[in-house]
Length: 325
Ligand code: ASP
Image 1 (spheres, helix red, strand yellow):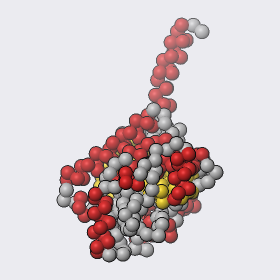
Image 2: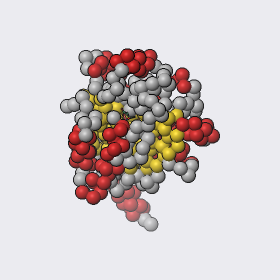
Image 3: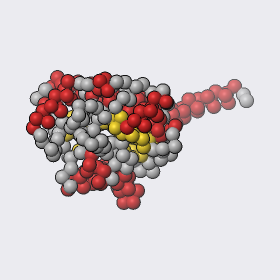
Image 4: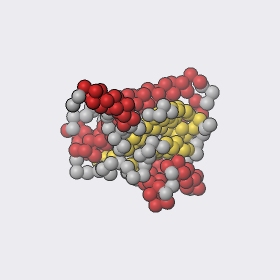
């Protein structure tokens, strides 16, 4: 090859390469939906949430730029929120009626339709990592209680004493609730966390992690660890993570129904999420959802006063918000 031919080849590669290397990516997260009572007037407190949501999103973006998979990013982003006392997941989990913390989490990979979930665990520091271990390193999809903990320990995950999950705020929520003996529409659970990611290979993944609902009894498990209710992902349609009154989400098969609306009714992701929230409202359930599709279209819908939420995209678009616009 002559020198001028090499030069032309190098020049055309230099022009063309950026066009192909600008693969799309997107991260969308939630930190729970509900009544924002104590937060409404407190700008300083709101700021703490906005800063943590931004930290999680920026970490997700950094990892995607490094070429990490959607699955890796979902786990890392959710772990950031699990490690914060602000959210009802991991460290900040709400209390059961007997004053313990029992955690649930799930993850689903949209490229393979593999899924993993754990429920009712008391000693796994980052439940989302255990959900991923179930997905990748067991022949099961859903493990619960002591068995799930035993499995997590065997996989070498970080285990903690249940006391690690003690936070004064959540404990006071339990005490106040028990005093009021308000059985229905308990709004002190806000803070379940979730994440959906589109990676630079075009694959999507979703995960959800929660402490459940304050004052829960009898081993109650909500929608968050239930694949198809609180979490779902399929490259053909969307990746979804939900937050809200779990019983309603289970009854609706909420996350899977959004995927079905897209697959069978050709709805766009935002349209499908709106339709599902409409069904939730019809049943008088409350909550929200985040989702994205393999093109990086984002949806963040809720029927509550607010939802901690945010997204970041390769296009440069970014949003972080708590209240309705
Ligand atoms: N969905 C969770 C549950 O029912 C709680 C929440 O998202 O606020 O356990």
